[in-house]
Image: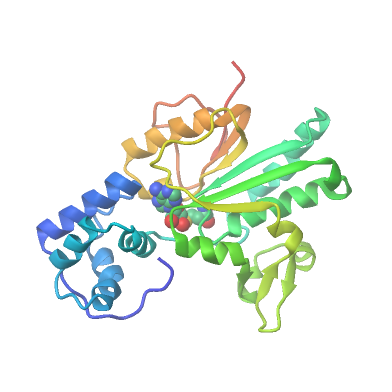
Length: 278
Ligand SMILES: C[S@@+](CC[C@H](N)C(=O)[O-])C[C@H]1O[C@@H](n2cnc3c(N)ncnc32)[C@H](O)[C@@H]1O
């Protein structure tokens, strides 16, 4: 959900609330069972747009949504897309100072990265900046692919443009701001094209089967599974493990843990895991 504005709040009945909670959790993993007011606040504009007085009317429309446009708008409203540059910067440092040199030493100058739940793009662009600054003049010798996915099409369209207000760059290292961000005539800044070209954005729902096994050298899935119930997160961590290469890395956020789940990752540092070679 990108913008929340003031609309008349329509109250959810218990059965309407239960339906929406189940729908979102089954299809998108997000647990809204304690978020009644959030649903009412965020969907108020949808009800207004369709001139509806009750959620029963809205749910009926959802059930017969052939084009998926209503569902797409619902997902855009109910996801939390909060993100910012240099968030948990130690992860980007770890990538630049440990993973890239390790590959360089092994003369394996190829890296495939997945930013899963990339929201408005700050995370994958920071990954690209960290890699570019680490490989420097050897850039042409490297093949770098960064796939960034999210279920919110609103978040992805902001991400693809790569345009951010100057205030959001305060946290970024000064050299990254000058090397990788270009000032636009309206005062905003756009991610430089060489960095944007390193990232491809796609819509992908983490509840769907993952298309690749043994594929990504590094996976970031930070501040996404905190919105899921434990058993859903556990299933998704298993899928990430399959998608990682042997020796590949998995980053979650510092406010999350996967140690309480049954999983095959080896813990390296808080929030950093590795799929060890068997
Ligand atoms: C709080 S943002 C995290 C952004 C970024 N990873 C970070 O740490 O700053 C969580 C993102 O997860 C996405 N998300 C939630 N459920 C998802 C799902 N089932 N599949 C893909 N993305 C999902 C949301 O749309 C949202 O953009």
